[in-house]
Structures are given as structure tokens and as C-alpha cells.
Image 1 (tube, rainbow, N blue to C red):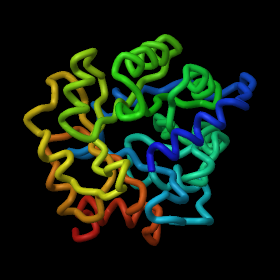
Image 2 (cartoon, one colour):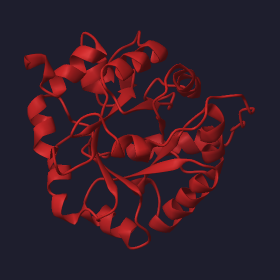
Image 3 (cartoon, one colour):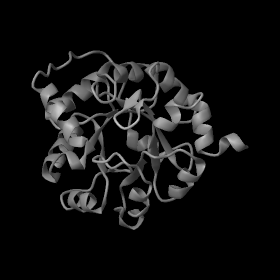
Image 4 (spheres, rainbow, N blue to C red):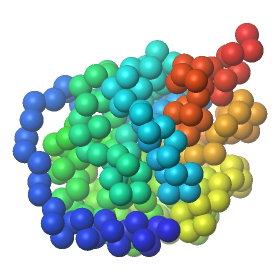
Length: 253
């Protein structure tokens, strides 16, 4: 599946048009937000309508209302899917969210080209996702540095020990994510994170991504990671607030 997504992304880039500069709120730090998280485990809450594995999750999702609900639900940051074809997102979703919330906004997309970094800055991203599996570690580091140069933070995503070691052989990301979803099979297991507990580099903030459905899932990583990134369990809940309360066991109090 990842190869199909990347192939489509390269096709999109062949007709890429850089958006114009627009006035946006000041940039906010994802790293600082996670260091000052509201719970023992930080929450990056995702604005997500669809996924390749599950299809439509919430066809009527309003990015602005959802982001504002995430703020009320105690999220520390918001992630916005901007891929059009596979996730039914759009860059304008991120811009709208940036204008509507004071939380840091992470752009979740398949970034493989330096033009997408400048695009991310112009549409209002505070941070971007860089996926280790999408490129060689040296190229990933180049994009990481280019993002830093324009004031964007990066969540560098790996899935397994091999990818982690390949990245760390080149540089240590300030924010390191573990995707619990295998991007080939789209199967999801929290063991992707738990098996790496003793391998995480000191000094990096650790984010466990995907697969969180219950409070027991959160407890499985509590104390070993700094934050979790959650989309499906929140956008399919009755309300984002109810979904977050259930995940953190707050609905039982």
C-alpha cells in the first residue's frame, strides 16, 4: 500500500503548484506542547475522515469543530491528514485548523520532496511527518534539516528496529514516532512500540502512533512514551470528548 501511495504522491508532485503566502497565527512548538502535556501521556488528536484500511471513518467530519473539540478534550496537539486520494483530506483542512485552535498542528502526509516542506509552512503547519520507510535515511535527514531551517519541527516515524537503527546511524530526531501500523499490510499492533521500549534513544520525545482503542492500550505504553497519536478512536466516537475520556479512563470516574 505504501508504494501505491508514494507513486500517487510523485504523480501529484509532477503538477505541483506552490500555494501563495497567507497571514496565519504564530507557529507553536509540538515538542514544547508534549513536554508540557496535560496528562501522563500526551495526546496528538487526529483530524481524519478516511483511511485506506478502514475506508470512510467520518464522512461529515468538520476539521474546525473537531479540532476545537480536541482542545476541550485535553489534546496537546492536533494532527491533520492532508492527503487527498487515500485519506480524503486537503491542505485547506490544516489551514482552517491552524486558524481555529491554539494547539500545535502537525501535517500528516507523505512528504518526499523539499517543495512539500515550503508548502507545509505556507499552509500553517507547525510540524510535519517524515516517514523513514519512504526514503533513505540520508535523504530523510536532508528534509529534516530543510524543515528546521524554515521553522518546522519534524515527527520522524519508524516502524521497527531496523528502521530505527538506520535513522539513528545518521542522526537522532528530536521527536521520534513509532507507527504501530505496518504500511505494507496495514495490520496494527502495539507490539511495534512495546518491543522497542529499551531501544529508544535518550533525549528524543517518543510518540506511539495508531492502534489505541481502549484505556488498556494507553496503559500498555504509559510511562514509556511521551505521547500517543490517535485518530480512528476519536473520529468514530459519539464526540471527541467522549472518545478521549474513554481512552484515558476518565469516563469511569
